[in-house]
Length: 219
Image (cartoon, rainbow, N blue to C red):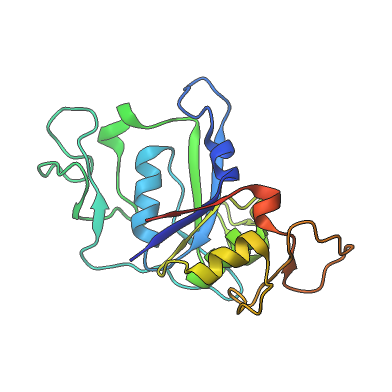
């Protein structure tokens, strides 16, 4: 089971996207390598294209199934699916990816939001969870974009994990690592209201529930 993790600050990042004349909106996330090609396809069908990228330095290769599931709806109502002309399924189905390992949505542009782009870096699930709990782009790491430059996220909005969070993890997010609970992904999360001065020790972060809002997990 794959889980999409995000803090409620994510909702602010996508507010207003539906207006085509609105300013460019970009969301940034990282995590599961197994889910990477499927999530990349979904993002590209919803907004403008972005390549499938992995973390540099210590990269985790994105999964590239021989016959992957792709998001292949008939969003413009012409009876033709967006990728290869096969009958539409209006959801995920077995299909063929394009050269950059993402689905080709060229025939379905009527439902794409031209001022929205989703960025995702394949890092492995653990770093996806760390990114959400810390709101630190450092866990996604640098990634190389098409022009050869190496970039770091300006923000952290969401993560994807191949395993869902348990009660212990949710309590750590909300309350910090108190009560003798095991740490989540080796992070030390401070309690709400903790006034420990900066700089904080390595892998120690302010309380995310207090600073960024409630944790949201799908499914």
